[in-house]
Length: 401
Image 1: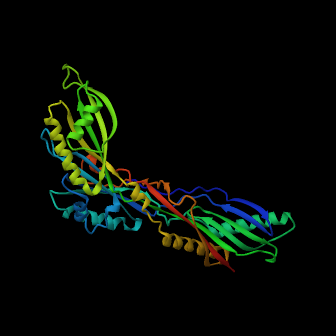
Image 2: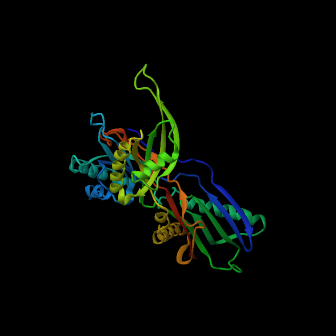
Image 3: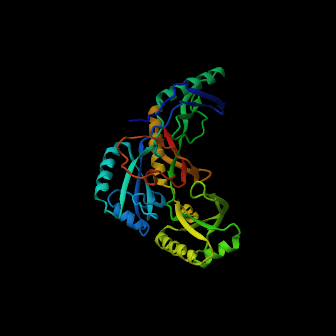
């Protein structure tokens, strides 16, 4: 069994400070790594090509998997069949994220579902892909030590000017980093303009729900065919809206010693609504027969390559402001307890400068024996999740004594 664990660097505290009007400001930090607190399960379901997402979710009822968990769809031949042209199957991939404390329960639930899933219509396999840190995860941080270091540095700077570092009048931090910026009054609080605040910047990741399916179309022709002929054949077969990707010369020999045959392979990409996947695949199956009957020497094939979120789906995302404010208050209270002050009412809120920004959440690989069942490669190869966006919010709390 392989295990992944967080590694922490044992390095000195870093501190920086400066004198400002009637105050001294010091920044100090500790190195560290955010501890993963979630496990990422990959759940793969195989079905016939006449099944849609609604059929899959119905079969997975009770598992907690919804359309938002969909990570990818692909088509591949069923290797169980040994006929010259095996039936094409759909491979649905879902990412199920659970707390680390729920790994055992989730494994048991999916194992039970694996046995009760309607057969032969569906088959299921699953495994732990890795771990990740949630938006609420923080870096292990000794805030008491940070504040002690900050005061020592502030007193050193103020002492050089013949002054002293007094009460804390401002604290700022950003989650999940282990760093604080502290502002101290020089001497007494006289002349210190308020308000005195604890500022916390927090962020959470959100992912748009896939609502489109990406399909690769391939047309094979003789070496003398041109683009207009290929595009015309697709339109005549009822395929519209496909985007041309590339054309390549392909050469092969059936067996050793036989003549080499060359042909042109034209590639197109078709993006269709996920809700119309069944209708789209039916259309493409009919198109394959129609192009073969045209007598032009062309052959046609298609394969589902994945899913994506449309621009409209991405623009409809809403930041979880209530959760962000809750995260910020929890962090402010933690800072206040370590500094001997209190976090009061909210004085101001400000969204991140970029609003929604693209981020990459690292997934730490974890291999666990026995999680994956005996399945063929397309079912166990995890597909990339849809782009992850982040919402950030800075909250200023009243600093109390």
